[in-house]
Image (cartoon, rainbow, N blue to C red; front, side, top):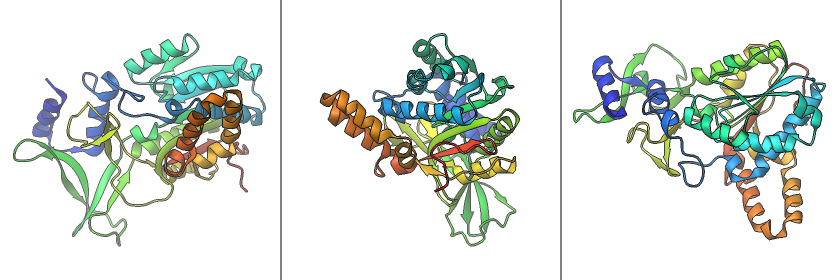
Amino acid sequence: MALLDRIKDQIRATGPLSVPQYMEICLHDPQDGYYATRPALGEAGDFITAPLASQMFGEIIGVWLIESWRRLGRPARFRLVEMGPGDGTLMLDIQRTVRQDPAFLAGQDLWLVETSIPLKKVQAERLGRGPQWATSLAGVPTGVPLLLVANELLDCLPARQFIRTQTGWSERGVGLDKAENLIFGLMAALPTRIFPHAPVGAVVEVSAAQENLARDLARRIIMDGGAALLIDYGRAEPGFGDTLQALSKHKKVSPLAEPGQADLTIHADFPAFIQAASAEGLPSHPILTQGKFLTAMGIIERAQALAAARPDRFDVLERQLSRLISPQDMGDLFKVICLAQPGLIPPAFETP
């Protein structure tokens, strides 16, 4: 039975689905979920990420990891972890970069956190025997400092959506109309007084999954030491807005159109993420735009060096650089945050 039909059957049997329930089914259903069966990355796929836009992105992340490791005191053993590693391109570029420091390379215990079987196969083909895999952070061994990277992971973690109505707040859900088509609607009203002055129609998104990850990372860093770098598109300040979207072949489509056939995402809530980590005892660091972070870490100089070595690629490198740091492209929409052990000032996050 097709995923759409199974979703309809579930709604008929138990009632409307919350947005997180719907996202979880569409993305991770073992038979037909997007990430379980057909994640399509790159120009020929459904979406493109920064590592696929340019090797410079992964190289700069590699530089950040080396410098963070040095500021940690160059531990002889540490866990290098990537969560949501996609097709392995980012880690491949990172590994090429960290070879410049043999002690870093010798000390790393490389782990990839991946739930998608198809993507895990692609990662293994690209990275060889170097990494080990886990399906969650909990599956990565403890006991040594952690250096973790996650690019476009938070947007895959679902959020509940609450809509302000004339009489208060109600949760948005997915149900069926009279013609048996999937439709967004309102579930039970909420006995809450949050945002009492919000206009009718305002949408608030709350992601328990994103906040739980922040807590898990914070507890791990407090226990073992280290730092985590997370890059994603999202908001730097609390606010309203419906950010649920579906992407298929680089175009936005209806999230209800073809369950399991498109990637569903929701913006990262960076203030809530940082607040959840701070509540566990980690100091907070500023939220940077991707453009500011990459520039601070030397991407312009890296582009100039590559152009000097390959003048025939100047135009290509210029376009790639613009895509990564320009406010009109990824530069402002994407944000970068860091969770770091108390006392560690991570590279690029130094207070001016």
